[in-house]
Image: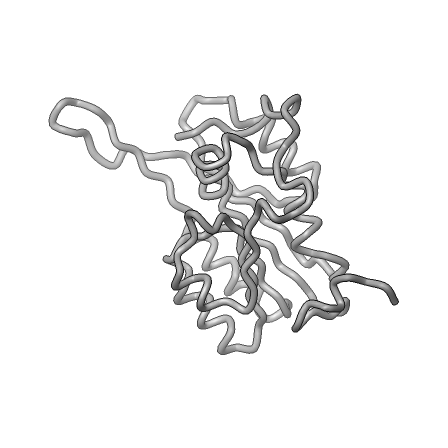
Length: 189
């Protein structure tokens, strides 16, 4: 069989894969460093790479009463992602009256990984957040392979060092959305 993924250490077409994507993390890195939007279809295709997809979940943070992310959420759903949504909540107000919002899926992502670990062989994390190091270590101690797809510019070195495989997202074929499709990407926080 002439499958280029067979050359990747630890790869098997029989592996059951779970993909967990922190869309805000990838969105902000792509925008800030590349002026582009992530092509989540290419990300999903690369993450699975001929293996067996169990579940792909995308985690989205939205502003209350803001419908601008709806086309993006719909697109993720049509690609096969299970979309989990959270609204930003007011964390505090600065002395000059500026509101500071928060919306963080880290615990939700970690919980979903734990919920599915008994039916997975490989966990693919779409985030460079170093807060995931502890759950990554737990998953690996339980025998799971862990791969991260993110931006090297914004990925914690501790996370890169902890996982079985790190892929710099721009190295994926068609990693970014073509210009004409960018209007459907999520708005920043």
